[in-house]
Amino acid sequence: MDLQHDSVRTPSLATLRLSMRILFFAMGSVFGAWASRIPDVKRALALSDGALGLALFAGPAGEFCAITVTALVIRRIGSKAVMVMGLPLYGATLALVGAAPSFAWLAAALFGFGFACNYYNIALNAQAVAVEVMHKRPVMSSFHGMWSLGGVAGGIAGLGRCGSGSGLGLCGRRRRLGRGWSGRRRRLGLVEVCIVHVLS
Image (cartoon, rainbow, N blue to C red; front, side, top):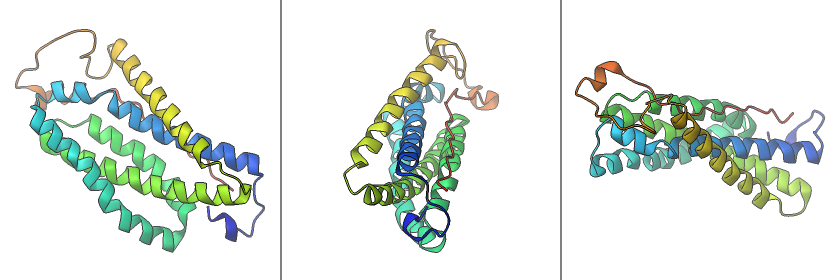
């Protein structure tokens, strides 16, 4: 939220700080869940190293495109509203990545994933700056530390899905995927963490 301009009761600093930590943790969890399943995606779609690299490039391209758009939206509706919309959107695009039956789908989904990531990230960091200003001391590093912990948690959760045999079922056993893969449309067991904690 735009903390400086709220006319309603402002939450305590401890509540704001905890909220930021939860939201940064959630963001890291989504990214960690995706990162832990990249080898599965490569195997499932039978992608070459070059094709995988090209698909992955779509993510940063989406992030770049989100910069100007997010700034304009924040100017219109505020960073709080963008943040609240951003995390569910980020998780939803992760599901699209997991459903990818082809290279083209994967690249398009990763573009959306990158866009949603930066859409949420920019708004979240704008909120974090406002919280830090209210604290009158550096607290940003603790928020970013929670992102890292979330990334670890998301990665472990993704590996846990591998161990349970869910999702693609490619972890712990080797199998060849025939040309009928695209027709079967198997889905990744990606962790979708969508925590929305309204700071009001």
